[in-house]
Image (cartoon, rainbow, N blue to C red; front, side):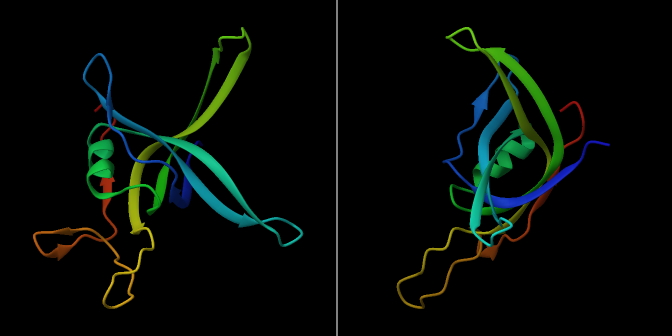
Length: 135
């Protein structure tokens, strides 16, 4: 079984890229807060990739600093860098993403934190997108 679920904040601006065969993807990093055995707050940075419709939806509704939940599988790889060293990689390939909270920026009048983007006046919350295999 290879299944991973994580909740964290998006570390960088979301940029959609396109492969030679016209597949869309987003590569980014999720910041996960936790506490070590001494009670000190720590942050792990976990790379993730979203493909096609999932990548498009992520780019449309989310941005750097927003909190999301990702569900998917771990994928490992390796390459040789410019120094000739073998580099091993590990990332989460997303199969579903839940939009949880927007980055905390207070509005001028109320001091309240906006929760989600609005589409035609209807707040969009907790969007889950599932992508069929092979898309």
